[in-house]
Image (cartoon, rainbow, N blue to C red):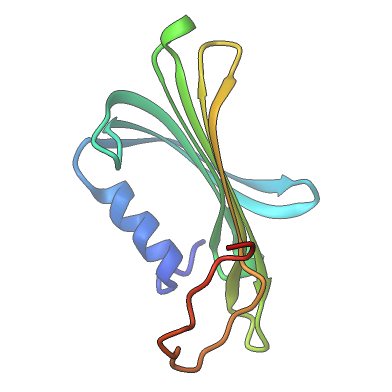
Length: 141
């Protein structure tokens, strides 16, 4: 049972309740030793506007405030197959609220899954104070 009051679950629930989405499976269990909820669904139009149909799945962690841990979206077949995968890793604050620590997104083409693009975001610190005008920076620039 998901506590849909959390922001992550609420946005997932909104997406799953939108038009053009059909839930095809729901499982609870463990993945890599962690409790997970897996939701499988079909979606006609992806979040980026790309037409499917998309075969999709979400893995949600109940032990991390029902935070999204992994997702996968696949459309097409053979050489025209496209798969977008993402993984998210969190750290928990003192109140048990998950804070994003690392996000990896891969866009692969073809049945063999050749990765065309990979994006990685790592968050090294998280502060709740109001940022000053020089707060945003990139290492190495």
